[in-house]
Length: 285
Image (cartoon, rainbow, N blue to C red; front, side, top):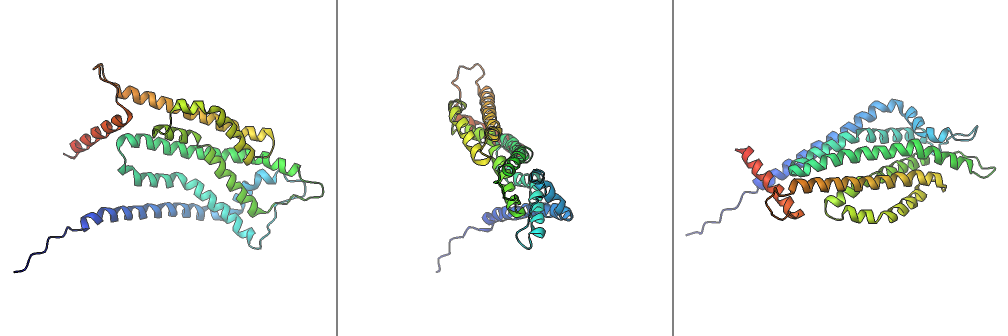
């Protein structure tokens, strides 16, 4: 008499959700790439004009008779296309972030979505604001400073590839620097610090902002201040938003004249999750 083998649990039920998530991720990544590709193909006939627009802060401050040069043989063809691709990525970023949000949103609780979506929108706006600040304010000042301080007998003829790389570095640096309010809010939201602790570190932040301004801008006080002051103001904005958020959350979680002690942050999160689970069960019925 043979002993029956114990039934094995089917693995298809466990693998199916994972495969469906992978398929959804693939589809959303393809949409992101397709959006960038479509924008790139639409703008590629205007690649030279796009590069001229991106090089305008430098080219208008070059000495009379000077111009940008192309060191590499194929650079006059590739560099404008590279600038067009970078611009396509910048323009497609809201759609890319929308696809990323659509993938992660179902896994968040309702109160987490209420916070994550505004953070996503505000961080995108602040990054664009930082890049625009670098293009319209910092690059003209930097170009004027560099061209006016060249030694006598030195012809200022920057390479187009090096200039584009430097410009992209500035866009990324200033875009990241303008994310200060989002970073401070996230740290407070996750319980890593408090608005009061951030306010106490204000002197160090001001000094650090001027150090960053010294590293990313020309060595003059005007350009350093143009970066340091916005960073400090954005830091203050992050503290203000964090305080407002904590005050509103405390009002929502305050007991209604029951004499009970206020809930701690962990108890508050657990209570919100329990309420949402009950609402999901009721909606399922």
